[in-house]
Length: 443
Ligand SMILES: Cc1ncc(COP(=O)(O)O)c(C=O)c1O
Image (cartoon, rainbow, N blue to C red):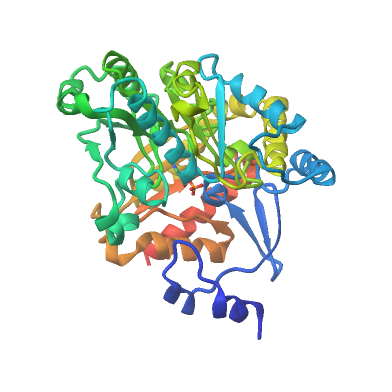
């Protein structure tokens, strides 16, 4: 039996209708380096989506690889409760240097775990600081925060959550978000006209609200939608005035994707919890983290008998190999000045997508921030494809045949390459996107 048949006999692939593999088989990976994935048949794929948004420095970065190998030779994992080691301490020092107001660092395994950690901290904080009625969460329309039941409930993507609705807690969504195109949008700095409608929704819930959970500025799985820095500033002011915590899910946006450590930095605000994963280890190994304030940590700090401790653990939290990878990622981000590179080249990444649209007439509603560029797929006559037509999926298949791993979200096409992708590879990625769109939409 060949490898693909052996795979399909047992392997249930993530986020896939397995029947699709009858006609479009999984591609067989041989190796991967930088922004390129090499296939068994000798062909290659440009990783235009950073392998689910995590490979911020591409594959097999030698500096990170070396750190990981060195760590493996010392030890690979020891329980983090009641132990410490040089690698993890170096990492918490790096993480606490991101924002002087976020000095406490809690580790988890996956992004979803870490969002739940932040939510649990906020709920427990209010319960043990005399505000037990503050026991609800609020999140944003079109948000995505992970795949556990609570994070699906906080999220607003029915595609992923619908079958489980009966066991999901009810979490209200902030609606009527004013979406923008990016930094140049006139409402980037000012949403005074839109704010009253948003504030009204917040005011109705403030008595019971423990925290607001949001993806800062860029909502990923919801369709790469962008809202303005002004909205974050308004939320910060309102939340502080009403003793409501802000949980910034920076899992996709953090560690340089938007050209800053935290997307919140664009708005000059500090959330009460910054949740990170993905780019934290540059996608080498799983690790997630919650950064929070001393004042929140202090509400849990007391004699054991008070029951105030935060009794959360994930088996591999603070895993030494992941910590070494994260230190390696920090080292490369600093040495190569990766985030400045993103800020400098973001406009040209977005222009590449615009050129694809200009050359095909099949893209509209452009938006982008940092190394995220997105647009919606339309027919050349301007009409919108139906979801059942699965145009994004067809474009994905054409792009794989031509040498790029582009994975549209429904009818949204986006570029999300490793932050250090060479220019010529970005050019090839755009050319493949263009040819694939033409093959699907104009044939
Ligand atoms: C914004 C955001 N939050 C949470 C998650 C969930 O992270 P994980 O898949 O590691 O659980 C993701 C994953 O894509 C994400 O983009």
